[in-house]
Amino acid sequence: MTRLAALDIHMRRGGRPVLTGAGLSVTGGECVGLIGPNGAGKSTLLSIMAGLATPDGGSVLMDDQPLGSWTRAQRARRLGFLEQGADCHWPLSVERVVTLGRLPHANGWAGPWSGETAADRAAIARAMERCDVTALSGRNVLKLSGGERARVMLARVLAGEPDILLADEPAAGLDPYHQLQVMELLAALARGGMAVIVVLHDLSLALRHCTRLCLLSADGRVAADGPPVPLLNGGIIEQVYGVELLRGGHQGMPYALPWRRLDMPAGGPAP
Image 1 (cartoon, rainbow, N blue to C red):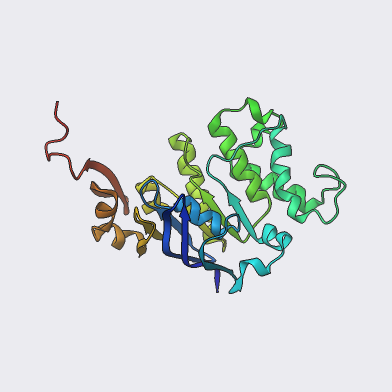
Image 2 (cartoon, rainbow, N blue to C red):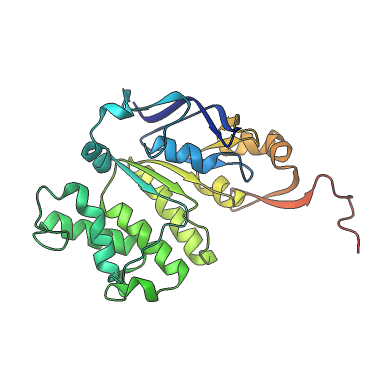
């Protein structure tokens, strides 16, 4: 069954179309990479699918039912959303920030840090371990580096144990080690049955870790949607991004590096 689907989404902002008939779906076991140039509407589409923005046209279904027919509590337990640049503005410990991710399961807690069940504590510990922030447990989140805070905010979402995860550029701002760690984690969560949609700009990360790619064009339309390697080899990525790609493979995995802009002379930029 399709876990989450956006159908024929239209959205305008400031009189300009941001999304034009865009559609995207995800089932359990999929890690879908949402890619495309800046301004293509990737973050907007993700926000609409999370129920945080209302489109001008189209609909969003969760388990084949309109997203609006689910209560906010039901949606919070099923659907985890990590916004782009998610941050914390309160001087809380890392563990307390991650604990906030259990609020959808609170069932009448006196507060987010009292009355946790064994299941809550296990979910919190598991999320912190997965995101490599256990050693930061007692640290003030405001004293962490940007990359460390990004991993803490992902752990907060994962502590809620959602069936569906929407992550907007979770690898942005991370060092290469943690970029790989986060993408390996998202791919593993999908293999375990979670439905994952992740916005990415790094094409090699998308090719290596996603089971499917959805490419938005600059006018907010779906230019392509399918398995990563055929999509890479079809030439549509170069057309949409306006770049020549350097393609290759290593240990059976593909990679693609932006090599030059297509409006640049073949020899590269002028000296």
